[in-house]
Image 1 (tube, rainbow, N blue to C red):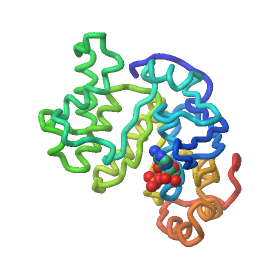
Image 2: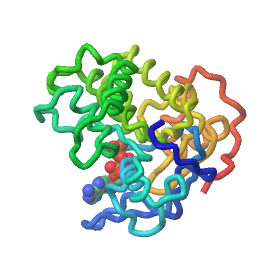
Image 3: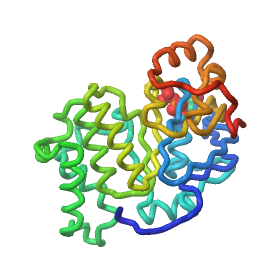
Image 4: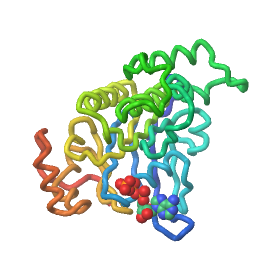
Length: 269
Ligand SMILES: Nc1ncnc2c1ncn2[C@@H]1O[C@H](COP(=O)(O)OP(=O)(O)OP(=O)(O)O)[C@@H](O)[C@H]1O
């Protein structure tokens, strides 16, 4: 971990946060949730339910209209300055024609830690090589990013986030367009990061495997429908309240892990 900042409180604290876009659209409404350190939380909800808006607010790309976000006890801006938060965007958000190599993209993860001349140090290079090795993309290092497959692109942006060495990682739909091998690899990576103390927030539409690799889940539909440990929150009742009965049954029939009793979430809001 590049930043040794220690903080005993929550990793992510969203308090009564709403976002209304300039055109009047409501992105999210009055959302509160608290994620501890070393936690993996899925953020799920239907299309247009506010998942990306919530992530972008946590990342500081979108300002809340009301409420407050704190990352490791700091404002989002302070946390960004200390490189505490990294982001892996959806593929559509990236300009793949931009003429940069895979290694250049991974090196971008180190920018916040470079000196003002932006010349990579030996430490920066070491982090970049380690991240590329971990994501198995070393042999692609010189390729232009636009020439990669969907799964390879995903690995490059995961490597960029790893090189950053942040304590909080936000992944927007990491499983879209990847094959089963890469999907398993990403799940293993997420588990490894949790063991290293990283808090991971994952927007995903791949609902059935949420219990496999997440310990928490947040369900949104503009407002927070349910939030808490997967064991007590990923239930028919909450899934139905978020996606409807039919979808909830479909999801649960696809879940191979044993589900506990369908009990209420401890922090249903
Ligand atoms: N820049 C914007 N300007 C205006 N409205 C926006 C903007 N971005 C998102 N919205 C609106 O905010 C609401 C939430 O959108 P958001 O993208 O956060 O949903 P989402 O859950 O991430 O959707 P999806 O699963 O389709 O990616 C939607 O009604 C959307 O139309």
